[in-house]
Amino acid sequence: MKGLVFDISEGTIHDGPGLRTTVFLKGCPLRCKWCHSPEGQGRTPEILHLPGAGERLCGVEWDADALGEHLAELAALCGEAGGVTFSGGEPMLQPEFLLEVLTRLTGVHTVVETSGFCDGDALLRVDAMVSRIHYGLKIVDDAAAEFWTGRGTRLILENLRKLDAEGRAEYNLRLPLIAGAVDTPENLRALEALSHTLRRCRRIDFLPANPLAPAKYAACGREFSPECRDCVTGHIPSWFRPAVPWSILD
Image (cartoon, rainbow, N blue to C red; front, top):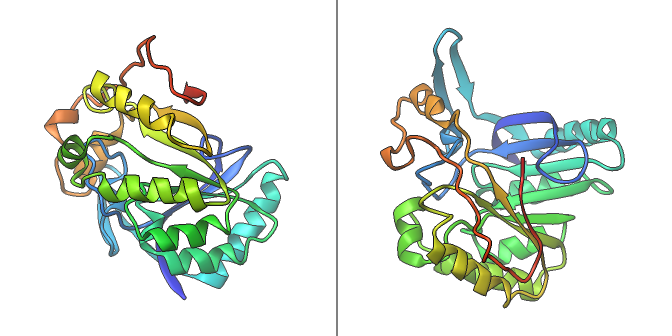
């Protein structure tokens, strides 16, 4: 079975415990206005035009066996404390390919990062094979999520509750801390209330905005959203009291 990958980063430290290899699968159903990986949104290979560096193909087809073997070798170099993380794009857009690769990583600590906008049954199948899931909830309110990400939250929240009730792997919530979008009082209060209804969520991690995001859009022949032009990291008020520990990752 074959799948489409747009990057493999070795030696990452923020995508799970220890030193890791992060695999970025191409294709995403969301169109977050602040997205810092626009090259990962499309579901087919594309050419990036990089100023001063020429052109680069973004999106390489991998065989599941070959990718699994390659990642197993890299995981051995990361040591027992590290592992492999699958990100995107949205890795759950290629669930069968993802599952095939995971079967080659027995004994390796594996993390899947997902927006939750995916098939819920496939998510549970992946959950049964990984060590951890980073659930990329962004905005709780349906209308606000539609504006900022291009999709509402009904399916995302439905799958979160399914994962919480039926899942096996540990999971964290992960939100990009975007000023004026994610850090609003309305969204943080909704997130706080939601956290008190979840049984298995371990923690909430907020990710800082990426100031380099606008440059990637030019390489893709697109314009960065004016609402996120400054790509500002928001803040967490002192009254925020979720039911689980939280942190802002460096």
